[in-house]
Structure formats: structure tokens, C-alpha cells
Amino acid sequence: GESVGLHLPTLSVQEGDNSIINCAYSNSASDYFIWYKQESGKGPQFIIDIRSNMDKRQGQRVTVLLNKTVKHLSLQIAATQPGDSAVYFCAENSGTYKYIFGTGTRLKVLA
Amino acid sequence: KAGVTQTPRYLIKTRGQQVTLSCSPISGHRSVSWYQQTPGQGLQFLFEYFSETQRNKGNFPGRFSGRQFSNSRSEMNVSTLELGDSALYLCASSSETGSDTGELFFGEGSRLTVL
Image 1 (cartoon, rainbow over the protein chains, first blue to last red):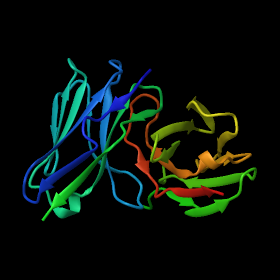
Image 2: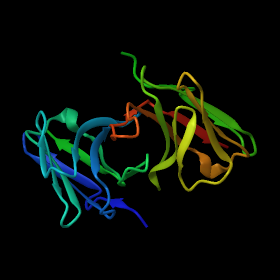
Image 3: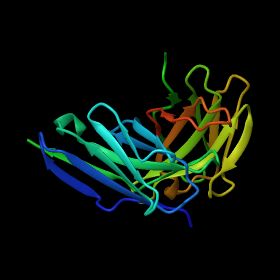
Image 4: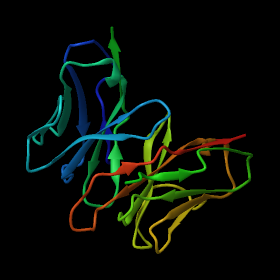
């Protein structure tokens, strides 16, 4: 069935280093992808999105890369800060009015 | 602009009871979706409504139902509660009109505990 998965459940990085969070998706028809950040006790918060007609999109300190050939997404966070500690989810949408979310990666920023 | 508002934030029920959760979307958003979040299953899609019509439904039993009102506010109901229904129920709204996918804006969720 459809699935969106993450390679690493927990990622620990030193403050100031760059973080890379990966995500694999299985539905080749998906045409819109979002990365969300969820802090403890809060709902998911939008970070950045990308459509299937692009392979890279940059935001403030974040970059999303999309490789449709291998159905892979990644989220790069530059100069990781303590406030970046959270669980990160990728989500895919294939135009069926629903999103499929990955299982999430916990990012821990070490001082 | 107010965000997505969910009520109640926390509730405790016992097995066999029913529960109704409410969601007020961002003003102007007509699409409302519901997701269940559990440690074991992650975020699972429940259903999506647009202009009072359910456009998609996830793989949940019939005990889970929802509706949307003319002002775009939405409610979901779970009847005959089971222990496994304990979860964080998240509501999200979107400006998506059907012709273009829009991002989901989530509320803080309603945390349901079933004893």
C-alpha cells in the first residue's frame, strides 16, 4: 500500500552543524510534499513545501530536495539551533484530499 | 488571523462512551481534515471535508464519523470508545479549493484518553 517512511528515527547533531533528515515515499503519483515540525504538546507546524515539478526549494535556513527517480525527499537545516529540536514529518499528497505522513524523525540538538 | 482552534484540548472517557471533538478552521478555509496521531501508528488520515461534503475517508471503522457545517466548522465523533482510540486528534484546515493543493494548517489537537 501507500507509505511514506523515514530512514532514521532519531538524529542527534551538534549545535551549529547542518542537519539532514531523509524521507522515502512510495506513491509515484504524489505531486506535492510538505515537511512539518512538531514540538512536544503542539500540532505540526509547516516548514517548507515542494511540488513535483521542482527538485529543490530553499527557505530560511531550510532546503528541501526532491528526487523523483528514487522517490526520496530530504530536509536540510543549516546551522542547527536548540530551537530546532523537535520531531520532523514528511507528508505527501497525491491529489486525493489527504496527506500520507511519515513516521517522523526526532532531531536532538546537542549543545 | 486566528489559527485552527480545537476543543476540548484534553478529555478522559471510559470504554463504551462516545466523544465529540470540535474544530474551527482558519477564517476563509473551506477544507477541514482530521488526523489521528498515536506513538505506534503516527499520523493517520481520518477524513476530509469541503463545503459540507466528505471528499475522502481513511481506513477507520464506522465508529469514527464527522461532519462539516456551513460555516466550515467541523466536528468528529467516535462512538463506543475503545482503549485503542486513545490518541491525539488533530484537525487541519486548508485553503485548497480542489484545483490546487494547499498546505495544511494544524490545530494543537484534542488529546483523548480512554480508560
